[in-house]
Length: 254
Image (cartoon, rainbow, N blue to C red; front, side, top):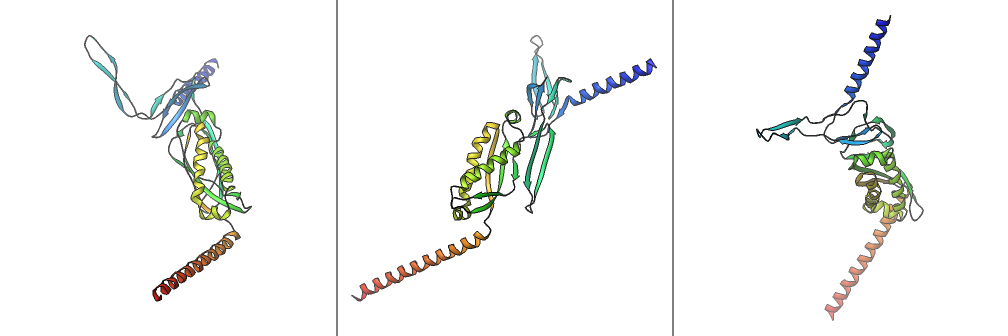
C-alpha cells in the first residue's frame, strides 16, 4: 500500500510540475502582448519578437562571435513564480439589426493592440431646446500602453461606453435639435474630449462617429420647417431678381 501511495504522489507531483512548465511557455501573435507578474507584482511585458540573430558573447582570443536565435512569439518565464496578468471585459454592443447584446470576456491574458471598433447601443439625449433624440455612435480605439491599461482600468469597454455617453450628453446639450440632425459633424469633436480622458488609461481614441440620429416625429416637423424656410428664401430671391430686372429696364428706358 505504501508503494502504491508513493507512486500516486509521484505521478501527482509530476503532473503538477509538467503543468507549470507548460504554463511557463507563452505564444504571442502579431499585435499581442502579455503582462507578466512575479509573485503578484509587475515583472515584464511580453511582445512578439522577430526571428533574428544578435551577438551574445565575444571570445577575445579566437575572436569568434557566438549568436543566439529568438523564435517569433515564443517566450519562456519562470515556473511557479511568474503569472500573466488577467482581465475581464463585460459590455453591451448593438448588432446590424439594432439589437443589444452582452459581450463578456473572462480571465483573458492576451492584450490586443489592434484597432478595435465598438458599436454601442443608442444613447438618448436632450438638446438645448429640450428635444429628446437618440444618437447611434461608434468608437474606434487602440491600446497604446498595455501595462497602464491593465493596471489603471477595470472593464475598459464599459468605462469607454460610460464616458462616451457623458460626452455625447454634454455636447448635444449645447446644441439645438436641428443642429444635431443637420450638423452631425459637429458632434465628432466628442473624440477629442474622450481621448483626453482615455490617455490616462494608456488608450488612444482614434475617432467617434455618429452613424444615425433618430428624432421620431420631430424629424417630419423639422423637415417641414426646413422646406418652409427654403420656400421663403426662394420667394426672397425671386423678389430680388424681379426688382433688379425692373431697375435695369427703367435705367435703360431713361
